Length: 144
Image: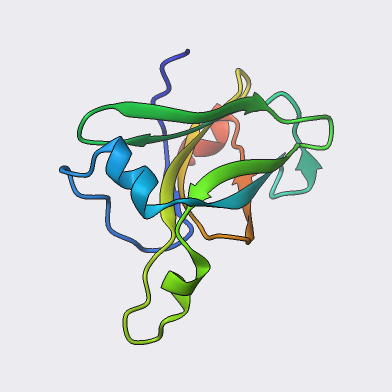
């Protein structure tokens, strides 16, 4: 696997990082259900879908780093139906003690663009859509 150094971090939801003591086994026990993620990669302010963007979905736990998904976007800039562990839906519906979804780190890499990173929250039975917006290296430079 290529080493990715993310250039930006965009969080779809403000949520704390999982505690350092959370193990992969604990994570799976807390997230026994499934949620779905759809990736939409584009450039030029979302005007142009971008193919061949390599997507990595992972999470760091106390005992290991786990790669949940690795794949490339299609000609329409999409990866659809990525199944990920998620907490039971009821946990997120209790208003007094609403739990959060399962948090994942998403990294996008393409040789022509700056790498980017995102944090996404996944819930049981819900398809979360993550727009991945790519920038050319010169787009990140300040005006002279």
